[in-house]
Length: 178
Image (tube, rainbow, N blue to C red; front, side):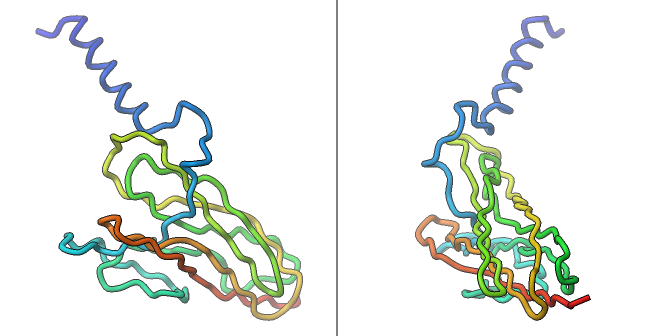
C-alpha cells in the first residue's frame, strides 16, 4: 500500500524531471547559438533518421542519405501578391529536450530575405532524448515583383560532436504584381 509520503516523493521527483528541461535562471547569451539544420551521422554511429522531403529547397551543402533534416525546413507559399504580408516559418533541429527556439533575425536586401534562426540550450546536463523540430516564424512583405529568395542560415553538426559547418537552405518565391 502506498503511503502519503510515497506519493509526495513521486510527485516531487516528477516535478524535478519537468524542471530539468527548462531554464529557470533567465537568459544566458552563452547558451544561444545558430540553429541546427542538418545532423550528420558520426563515425561508427548508428544512421540518423533519413532526410525528409525538403520541397524546392536548395542547400549550400546538400544532406547525405542518412542525415537528419527538418521535413520542411522553409515553409512559405510558392507565389504571393506584391505588397502582401506573408508568414514564413523555418525549422531547426533540437537534438534533445533541453533545446528551445530563441528568435529569428531577418535582413532584407535586393530580392532576398536572409533569416538566421537562433536556438538556446537550457544548460542542464540531463535532458530528455527527444529530437524535435523547432519552429521560428516571421511575417515578411515583398515590395517588388519577380523572383525572391528566402535564405536560411544555420549549421550542420555531426552526431558525435566532431564537426560544425555553416550552411544555408534557400527557397524561391515568385511575387506577382496583382
